[in-house]
Length: 419
Ligand SMILES: [Zn+2]
Image (cartoon, rainbow, N blue to C red):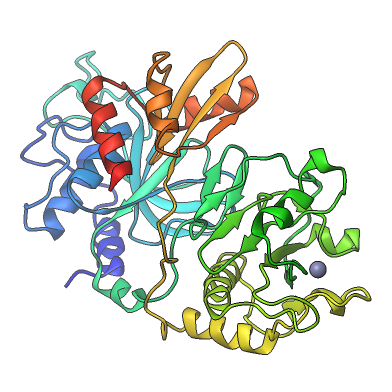
C-alpha cells in the first residue's frame, strides 16, 4: 500500500529532472510531474492526461480521489504531506504541485516548470512547446494565494483516521460553519468581525423549549442584542453566526471575541431545564469538530458553562462533564457515526450582488448568471440564497472553478438535492 511519505520521497527523487509521461510527450509541464507520480503509484490505472492543471481537482474527483477545496476563511484547513495542490494562477490553465509539508503560513512543495520560459537547446522556441522540453522539477515554498484546493491518493496511513470527525467546514456567504451544520438561519444576527484567536467554547441553554423563539431572539431585527454561533436541537445543528464573527453570548465582550457560543434547545422547562439525549449527541459531535479545527483540548478548561463566566443560571440542567466525555468519545473514534440525523448539510447556495446577477455555488464550483427561472428550481429544494457585496461575489467567481449551468447540469444538481 502507498503511504503519503512514499509519494513525498518519490517526488524528492525527481528533483532536478525533466519529468514526462508517455501520455504527454510535451515534457516538463507542471501537470506532467503530477501525472507521472499518480500513474506510478496507481500502476497506470489513474492518470491526468491532457488535463490543464486548473482542472486537476475536477479530474481527481472523476477518478474517485479525495478532493478538498481551500477555504480562505479557515486558516486551519491545510493540505497534508503527499497531497497535490492546485492553483488558478499564474495563468488561466493554472498550476499544480506536490505538498511536502504545510502550516498556516505556507507549504514546502515540489513542482515542475515554475521558472517560466526556457530555451535550453537554443532554437528560439519555448521548450514547453517542444516534445521533451519544459522546465525542471524543483523544490519551492509558497503561501496559499490562489490555491483552490488539493487532492490525494488513497494512502494506507490515512485509514486510521476513519471513524473520527474529519468533516470539512462550510462557508455560506461570508460565514464559516462546521461541516456538521444541518441548517443555516438566513436572518441577520447580532455580530461583528472584531474576532480574536478562538480558544474557548461556551455552553448555553435556551431557557426555553421553542427552537424558533430562541433563534428569533438573536436576530438583529428583534433588537435584543444577543446571539450565538450555533443552536443545537435533537434534530439539527443550526448555523447562526459564522465562526469567523464575534457573537454576543457570554455577557463579556473579551470572552465573546475569543470563544464560540453553542446554544441548546431545552427538552424540559423550569426548573430542571434539561436537554434531550439526541441534543447531547449532536452537541458532542460539534464540539469534537470545533476542537479538532481550532486545535483545542477537549477538556473542562476549554469547554465551559456560561455561568463560569458571569453570574447566570445558564446553561440550566446541562451536564457539561457528560458533554465533554461524549465529545472525547467522538474524537477518539469510539462513535463511528459522524453525521447528524436527518440530512447532511447541502453544500450549495445561490448568491447575488448589485450589478452582478445571480450565481450558484456548489462543491467549489461557481456557476455564473442563472436564467431568471433557474434559481427558483434550487430555492424550491431549500437551497439558501445569500445577498453579498459585489466584492464578495467577484471573490467567489475568481477563487472557484467556473462552469456553465446548462439544462443537463441543472437537472443533475436538482436530482442530487431530491435524494
Ligand atoms: Zn447562556
